[in-house]
Length: 142
Image 1 (cartoon, rainbow, N blue to C red):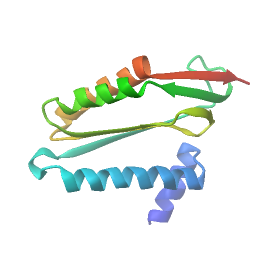
Image 2 (tube, rainbow, N blue to C red; image 1 turned 60 degrees about the vertical axis):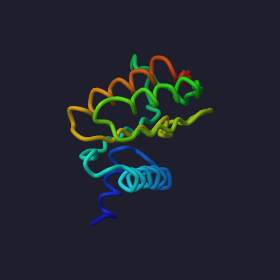
Image 3 (cartoon, one colour; image 1 turned 120 degrees about the vertical axis):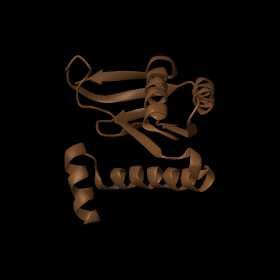
């Protein structure tokens, strides 16, 4: 069953076998760590985002790769701010810096907390901050 799910995910997401396994290993490690370290009364949901390099720009034009850089101090500050929000048990972020190819992971974001109503606004706020203030993405057209 798990093999079929992995194969389906690979087809849907156009992710190479090894990349998908790496994503799942990191996310599973984060989930285990969060469950181990957070009080059960504070933990009812874990939301995960895995951003990947698309083959097209936001304008729909084809791209062949992307270069990313990010400000680690701003990222640390954004994570710390999110962790202080009511109902948030933990926040984890990984950003892939460098020259990325189509299908490569750009970032992984994980927000854990009590309720969906606590987590969703913080998750959106963090993703918006990362995309608008923390990471710089330079797309290379075909």
